[in-house]
Length: 91
Image (cartoon, rainbow, N blue to C red; front, side, top):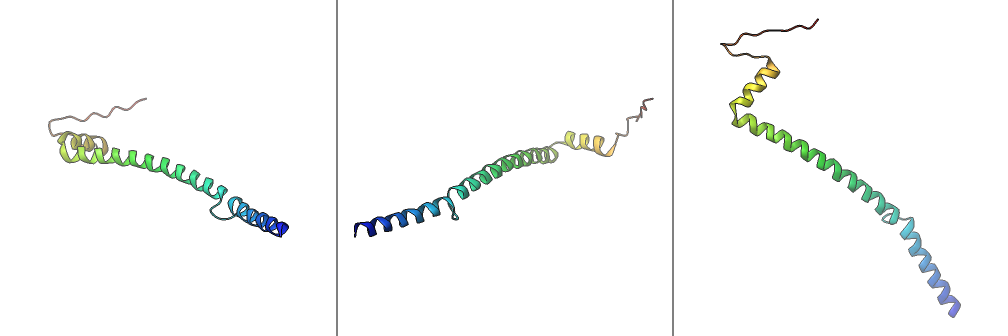
């Protein structure tokens, strides 16, 4: 009777060790998921910083005429009526 209990206990222990190390949800699976979470957290932080910069630019364009004027000058090459445009060409 004692050997049967010992064998049953070892089989149960072996089953749980197998699940712990090799089955889904085991230690390697948990470590892989933790690495994915860390990678996604870094990506989210980068995207949040980009979104904040874009939101600040949108707010600036909505509120200020100077920002709109600067954007029109740099992106569209616009000048005011009383200004003269000079194009300098390097040799």
